[in-house]
Amino acid sequence: MVVWLLILTFRTVGKTQDIEPNSIYRCPPDFLAVGDLPVFLVAEKQPQFPGGHKAMMSFIYSNLKYSKEDPRQKVVYVEFIVDTTGQVRNPCILNNTTGSLTPLEQEVVRVVQLLPAWSPGVQRRKKVPVRMSFPVRF
Image 1 (cartoon, helix red, strand yellow):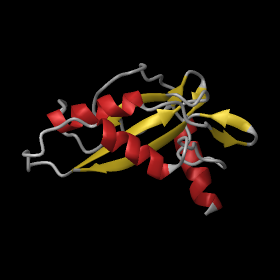
Image 2: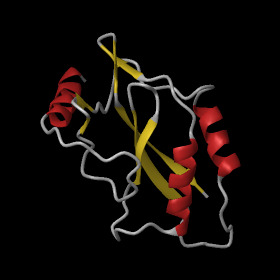
Image 3: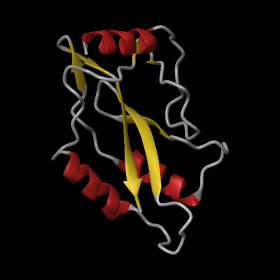
């Protein structure tokens, strides 16, 4: 487990290219850095949504506006960074190979941008940006 964490941390720290705030696009192979801070895949204390995972999913589903008649897409995988202040940054859609977002993907990104501040991730007693991802099922 320790070796796996070290490999992930090294891979994340290895490159330091900034990602533009509020960009909506296909997810890059890996989020590299926020400013001069590496983005962690796993932190000692993961970011927490106020009220927990159930409250986050409730927030998302209560704010989604979509046509229930579109049977083509059942799950949208979204990824974003929770920065050191707890703000959600750089939402993007995983497994999007077209370069343009479907209406459902656009809606998921819109709602993720509405998420309130989280408690940030912590690594070695310092707040760090952490990459988060989860599925939104329709």
